[in-house]
Each structure stands twice: as C-alpha cells, then as structure tokens.
Image (cartoon, rainbow, N blue to C red; front, side, top):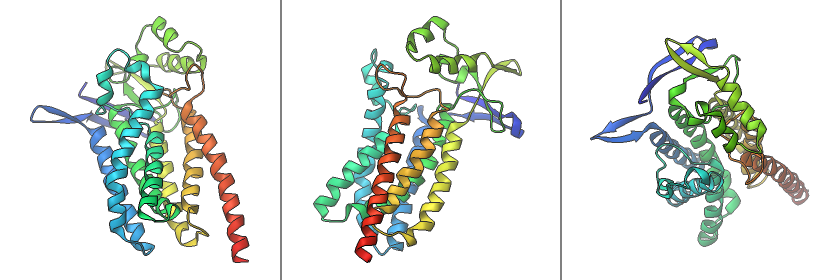
Length: 307
C-alpha cells in the first residue's frame, strides 16, 4: 500500500492517507530515507551550534561529520545485516537497498565512535571533547530519525490497549502478522516469547471500516520522546560538566536505559545468533554498566586532580 490510515483510538486521533514516500519522475523515494537525511542534517547543525557555544571551531565538526555520516550509515547497515541475515540470504543484492529500512542505530554509533577515534588521532584533537559535542548532534538525529519508522510502519511494540495504542492496517505491516502459523513457528523456533508477542497481536486484530488493523505500542514514538528529554538534559548540563567525556557518558547511560526498556516492548528485535536474547537490549545493558563505571571513575579522578 502507498497510503494508509494510522489511528490512535484512545487519544481520538486518526491520520488519513499517510503515505510511505513520494514519486519523483517515476522513482520512489521513501520518507524513511528523507527523514534520516533530515535527522543527520539537523544533528550536524546542533553539533556546530554546540561547538560555537563551547568555544570550538565549527568547521572542524563539519569536516568530521562529512566522514562520520558516511561511515555510520554503512556500519548501521552492516550491523543490521549481521543479525538479520536470513532476510537477505535468498537475495544478497537487497543488502544494498536501504530505502525501506534496515539501519540499526547501534551500528551507526559504533561506526561514529571508531571514526572519532581515528579522526582525533590524525588531527591531534581531544577525542573526549569531540564526542561530548558530537553526541548532542547524535541524539538530535536519533529523535528525528525514529519518525522514519513511523512512515515505514515498523519498529513498533507488542499489543496494548493503553493510552498511546496505535492501530495499523494489517496489509501495510510486515508479513509475520498475517503469515501462516507454521511459517512463524519455524522462524521463531527457540524464541517462544517473540512468537507469543506476534500471536498476541494477531489475536487482537480490530475491524475498522472493513479493514483489519493491528493495535500496538508505538515504540518509535517512545524512543523519540525519550531522546528529546535526554537532549534537553544534556544541553542544560553541558555548562556544569566536570571533565571532557562526561556528556558522552551521560548520553550512553541515558540512551541505554531507555533502549533497555523500549527494546523489551518491540516485536521486531534482532537476536543474538541461535538464542532468544535481543542483541540491542543486551548491548544497551552492557553499555549502561560500562559507562556508569567509567563515569564514576573519571569523576573520582577529576576530584583528586582539583583537590
């Protein structure tokens, strides 16, 4: 479907004829890609603003962004493909098609951090200062980029009838929600919780004007709002930071905590090979613990230096 209605019944909101993209000279451009691009642009502008605010050279961040954005997109795709390779096994060339989704933010973060390490060593610049400034732009890009999932009708959660419950046309979501049971049992073998979530959604479809709708948590919205709050807190705290790198560590802790919660609601998780463990949820928890430990260590060290 090119357009569909998206409903938030408990909020009394119905969005009519929501398109997933636009046609330009016969070429389909997905809103997913457009929104990701807007997020990257605004993220860079916010990083430049933060650089000026903290007395740094904004041009340095432009040069870094031109490299980091390319590497991050590639690494975000690689991360997704690694943990969802079954989707591409029969058509490897589809790996190159990112217009319909399939970019994992943690892959992008990993790529950006590696790029920052190499770039700052070459330029003889403080890595920790760069990531403090850059993470403000990163979280901006994330809160905007998540709306690409909205237009793709993806990255939603399990069934709910809560306040923010979202209804999507069954014909406009992933195949799992209308696939034969034997297909799902094979796909989710060894992952009973994931299968149960899919079946719960299927068992609670709703008929709206002759069309079947599923009703789910809008987890993309939760993450976007979480990131917005995180952005405000990080910007406000910047002038109070005790050492370079503190803002980045606070970002990793804040984002990681939100992702542990939100990933636990999702039905399209990427799993650690051969296990029922959601890889992004596990990685989020590890990042929170590691960042919290490093934050405590560096704060203790900065107090000793200032004493």
